[in-house]
Structure formats: structure tokens, C-alpha cells
Picture: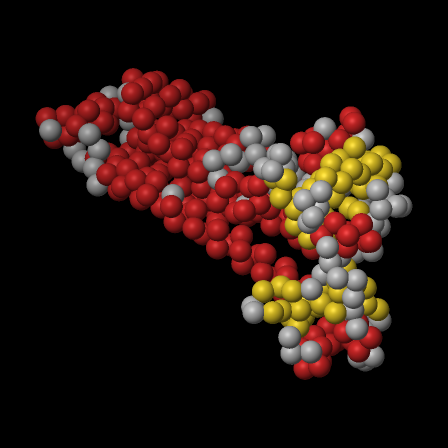
Length: 385
């Protein structure tokens, strides 16, 4: 162990002698790792948040389509759907999106009958009348409603409506309620100007998960203008969206990956005359080939592990403490208009180990292999060049 400590000490001093070259490699290596790790951290965290959110969605959502777009669905459809075998219950849902020009953010307005009773409230209660509302923490922070206890929104008739804030949501997933404004069902209908005989969509409860797809097929056959969406399809869609966006970002950063590969290839094809002379001197004064390889191994490990750990730390701070301000616009898409929310720290250890394997191991190999070729050469011929 004493021998290896001395080799490590010499490896550090050798890197410090070539400090400008070492710093250049460290910076390039760290930036590459930080960019790749940021994409993986952000994607995995968003996927975890979304999976948590989607656990509470209905077994089956039934929407009406008109001209390829989501349209309000007649309430009389529910009477027929109730008679389908396997359906345990059906609930009309009233909701819609609201763009707030004051804060330039999008809010989701949701009726109390749409399954919000299971959500946790930081304080207060759900709205009990048409002039009350419960809001997410992001909406409260943007509009100052946590202090004034009031929220003013402009309805479909271009009239300002004052709501008293009866509660503020608090949940383990900020993605679930951060942009949410919950109103009484009649208040949502009046705010958006919905016809009294129509709802936004239906939430259908199917206790047996094996029958969900069959029920969806029967609904589609009875009402060809509807689009039944199962919970499984919803989760798969979100997963595909995040995979596509993260893949797009990784493609953009492929230039950095290629640059790192070129750097590793340049080291693998040969070492500088100065390094060759150093190896020749070490061999001449009694170092054997194993000692030289151990020296170069520790040099490569120090550079690669320092860069890898620094890059991972920077990416962690970027994603979970700085809200991934560089990548969020691409990964989150239009949700960048939502009030700012903080992601719950979450990462996949397998992804980190895989990334470490494909970045650390090649660099160490590209340091050791050319050194081995020089170390087995006669020291005198090496020093003479």
C-alpha cells in the first residue's frame, strides 16, 4: 500500500507539472459529463413525477372528438356507458385551461367533482360554493393569493371574477397541483360558458383492470365520435414523450460526446515526446513496467473520476436547485409557461453507473495502452527519441 501511495503522489505531481493540459482536459471532460447527466437527471425526475401523478387518474377517460380535436361530450352518453358490463361508475368532469396574461402562466381549472378530494391541502379546505377556490402553491406564489386570500380571474365573457381562496394544496408531487385552481363544478361551467347538458369528459371506473380495454372497445363501438383513453395508454404516452425529448437533447449534445471520443482517440494513438522521455527515465532508474502502468492508471483515474464526480455534482445542482434552466424549455415543452416548480430529487443509479463506465473506462484505457507500448521499449532508445 505504501508503494501505491507513493505512486499516487507522483501521479498527482506529474499532472500538476502539466497543469494547463490537465485543466483543459478536466474542463472538457466535466462539461461533457455534466450535460449528459443533466439530461438523465431531468428526464428521470420528470418521469418519476409524472408516474406519481398518473397513479390517481381514472381507469378510463372518455372524450368526444370533433374534427380531430377534443370537444365537449353530451351528458346523455353517460347513461348508455353505465349499462356496459364491467363499468362500476361514471363521473362527468369539468375542467379547462386558463391563460393568465398578468403572470404569463397557464393554469388548469378543475371542478370539485373531478377526483380532487384525495389531494392533500397545506391549509384550508376545498371550495364549497361558486365564489370559492382552492389553488396550488405555484399559483399562490405568483398571484400573492396566499397573503390576500383572493384570486381574480377573467371568464369567457371577459368579466373579472373574484374568488375567495379557501385552501392551498400541498402534495408530495409539485407537478400535480402547482398550476391547479379548483372551483365548484357549477363555477367551472359558468366560468368557461359550458352548455348545461355537456361536460369536458367522463371518468369511468372499471374495477377489473383486465376488462378496461374491452370496455374501451365497446364505448368506441357505441359512440364512434369518442376517444376512450386507458390509464396504461396515458402512462405509455408520457413515457414516450420524455424519451423522445431526452433523446433529442442527447443528439444535440452528441457533438460534445464526439469531441470527448476524439480526445480519447488522440491519447490512445500515442503520447507526447515529453511523456515518453519521462517513462524512459523512470525505467532507467529502476521502475518496472508494472509500476509505469500503475502510474498511468492512477493519472487516468484521477482525471476521469474527478471530472465525472464534478460533472455529476454540477448537473445535480443544475437540475434540482436551479430548476434545469438550460434544459427545461426543451424537456418540459410548453409547460415552461407553468408557474415555476422544484423537482423532487430522483435519479437512476444504473444510468449513472452506465455513464461512468462509458466515460471513465475508455479514458483510463486510452491512458494506459500507449504507455504500455512505451514502457516495454528499451529505455535508452526511448530517451534518445
